[in-house]
Length: 210
Image (cartoon, rainbow, N blue to C red; front, side, top):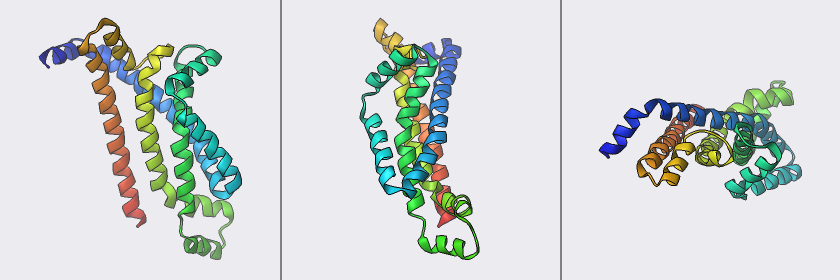
């Protein structure tokens, strides 16, 4: 354990730089997934037949082995940050689409009718009533997507990406347990912090909406 702390103290700047790269990859992929996934979730909530196709396609992407998906993307997009971000975007889509759709569907119809009763149009109902009430479900989806993305990002070095996976794979190649832990521990802490932070936010919204 002492050797681990000595290594971290000696290479703190490098590990911090890798952690920042890791966060940048995850945030970029997750941000893209939010931009695309939320509108698709809205479509799923309003058009069930089309929604089944959209969720089916997202399911197929989700069950694809992460390394195989990133390898296929590498063939098309080449090595590097862009390929990793696209892979994380694809892996983050399903929980965001599904939870947005479920959240919108669970809004009490009485509340929706009350909105119509005071003259709201479909767009106003969506943004002022349905979407705010569905936010706890959306946050639950983001929470799942963030944890998945942080884990998948650790294999980014295999396709030319950076992040904490570089330290893990350097440790594997050199058979150095300390370097493996120096990459794995911060990655695990990132996942725990993201899960706890989003979970706390989700609980606050649930209390506010109840």
